[in-house]
Length: 144
Length: 205
Image (cartoon, rainbow over all chains, first blue to last red):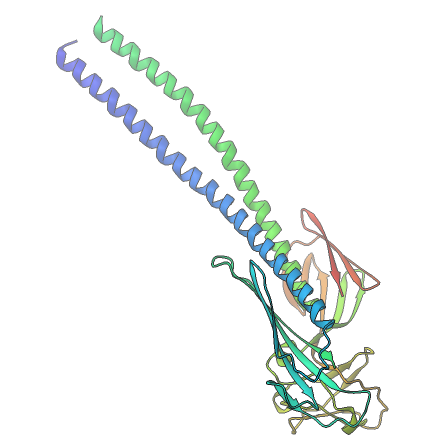
C-alpha cells in the first residue's frame, strides 16, 4: 500500500470512530433525557403530593385549634396567624352577633338567650415555596 | 507489514466498538423499557390519584351520603355560594318560622339553590327568594325543625360504575374500571377500585 493509501485509511478510521462516538452520544443523550424526564416527573408529583398532605394536616390542626378558641369575649379577635417555617397559616373572623366592637361584623338582635350569634372563620394555609404553590381555603362557622 | 497492522487494528477496533455498542444498547434499552413501564404505571397512578382527589373534594362538601354496592349518592353543598358570601349559614331563630327563615348577611336573590340542610340531616325544599335575607320554604304547612346553622344544597349527585366506566352525574370520571366496591362503616367510606391494579381508598365523612 502506498503512503497515500495508509494516510487515507488512518484518516477514515479516525473519522469513523468519531462518527460512531457521536452517534452513540446522541442516541444515549436522547434516552437519558427521556429517563431523566420520567424521574423528574415522578419526583415532582411526590413533592406536590407531600406538600398537599402537609397543607391538609396544617389546615386540620388550625381548624381544631380555632374550634377550641373562646371567642365570646368582650375583646374581639379579628384574625390569628400561626407561625410556621414552610406555610403561611392565618384566619380571619367575621362576627354575626350582637357585638359591635369588632372590625368585621354584622350586628343582629338576638332575643333568645341560648343564642349569642356566630363567627364565620376564613382559614388559609399557603405554601411558602416558590416552586410548589399550595393554597387551601376553608370557610366554616363557629357558635359563640 | 505496516498496512496489515493498521488493518488488524481497524478490525479489532470495530469488534471492540461493536461489543461495547451491543452491550450499551442492551443496557440502555433495559433502562428505557423499565422507565417506560414506570411511566405507564405512573400515569395509571395519576389517574387513580386525580379520581381520588376529585371524590375527596366532592365528599368533603357532601351531605347525607348513602351508598350501595357500586354507587355513592349524596347532596352537594353550594360551597361556592357560601364562600362568595351569597349565604351566611346563620339563621336568626327569633324571626323564623315554618314558612320562612331569616338569614342575616346573605344575598339570597343571587342564590339558585333549591334545598336547605340542617344539622339533624333534614332537608327542605326552598323557593327562589326575592329578599336578600329571607329563605322561603316551598311547603309552608309542614312543621319543621330548624337550627341556627344551615347549608344550601346545589344538587343531588351520584358516583356509579356502569359498563366498566366510573361516572359522576353522567360524566365519565375513570375508564377501564373493573371493580368499584363501596362500603360505608360508621362515618367512613371504604372504596376498592380496580383497573389493572387495585387501590383501597378511605374517606372520612
